[in-house]
Amino acid sequence: MAFVHPARVQFFEVDLQGVVFNMWYLAWFDNAMTAFLADLGFPYDAMKDLGWDVQLVHTEVDWRGGATFGDELGVEVSTDRIGTTSFTLAFRVLRGGDVLVEAKTVYVVVGFDGSGKRPVPDDLRKALTASG
Amino acid sequence: MAFVHPARVQFFEVDLQGVVFNMWYLAWFDNAMTAFLADLGFPYDAMKDLGWDVQLVHTEVDWRGGATFGDELGVEVSTDRIGTTSFTLAFRVLRGGDVLVEAKTVYVVVGFDGSGKRPVPDDLRKALTASG
Amino acid sequence: MAFVHPARVQFFEVDLQGVVFNMWYLAWFDNAMTAFLADLGFPYDAMKDLGWDVQLVHTEVDWRGGATFGDELGVEVSTDRIGTTSFTLAFRVLRGGDVLVEAKTVYVVVGFDGSGKRPVPDDLRKALTASG
Amino acid sequence: MAFVHPARVQFFEVDLQGVVFNMWYLAWFDNAMTAFLADLGFPYDAMKDLGWDVQLVHTEVDWRGGATFGDELGVEVSTDRIGTTSFTLAFRVLRGGDVLVEAKTVYVVVGFDGSGKRPVPDDLRKALTASG
Image (cartoon, rainbow over all chains, first blue to last red; front, side, top):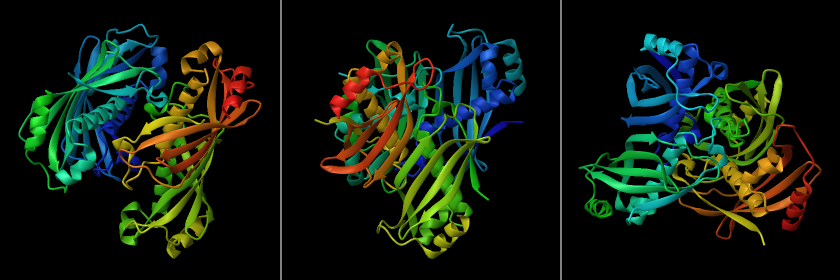
């Protein structure tokens, strides 16, 4: 079953065109990614101890509709692909039964100590695979 | 010659990883797009009179490096493609001679009155073509 | 009993000093104000019909501590003062039993149609008084 | 002569009421403060070496008018008061000859190493006094 993280549109996120300004979707994806990883057993607090973190290297977003003030949305997250040192998450922003926005975001796994790229850890790989 | 719009990294744009949080690049692209269209003869103030506006429907971004506090950046804008009702701009975020980020963003032309999609106006098409 | 609206610190809200950048508290106060007015019977959706809206004219904020990533906060809202055309809300940002931030914010009531200041409507005055 | 830092209103800063959402003024004050301190000889890059940084502990803001998209503003900064471990800056947001917003912001000086409050360094005190 898909993981869904809630998002409620805030007043200041809506621009002069009456819809949520595009950049705020990236904030929601980040929130949803953090919640998704925590749900898989990797809360942000644990990452220092685990020794790794993730960095965004690519995102692509398609807007089919615009959310507006007061909308109660769901941000669905699923694993799209797992590579050697990176993984891709797929997002869908849902308002009721409508898909407003679809996105894919690629993260590389990096050492928490700034040591750069490293292979996707086995336990993360297993958890992402099981969630896919 | 390429159009370049300046961006100076602000303190609050830098996150716990020490680099600019991803969403702020979309703010810079929007600023650069607005300046680019104004430079082509279509300032935002004129759009109400012209009867059209643009809406973002797709963006894709590749990060090669991260900007940090105090960086003086240039956001280069060029026309990538012109379709029937949409056009694509290409962006490069430059720090000195380095390309930190590359992006493409698709805009549809819409009526300013909310009447929906419309063909790319001839004068905009000519200006975009000349700038490409 | 005090009205408390939840706020969860987002990754991008935390700055290079490791705490939430000051401006985001104003976003939280706005969210909490909206929820507070909705709770009193004045949801934002209704304001167009009611014919009035509120505009921020003054804010003052005291920080005693800083929130950081992942903190689950409560933003407490109460009525501080009701004037002729304005009212003041008091906010406290709570983390567990600690008060991190205190603030007061003054709103004037304005016509939804841009007609400017107007007296605080009777039903709003009653609701604010009862909540004080 | 007063120090003035430019601010250009960005599209996404304007909310459904057609004016800049309140929190963005705090972003501008932060930018203006950073530029003001740099102008006095204390650029952010130097602070690690100097051993101190500043933390916001209080702000108060009065809005007389609202800025909107495309406005070219000036944020005037001056020293209002210098205490033992803190100093107060006064800000005025100017549009042409109009004062849109006035604010005061109190900063405490803290050790860059997280060692907490410390007296305002002599060279900073002199520079702030001379600028007052």
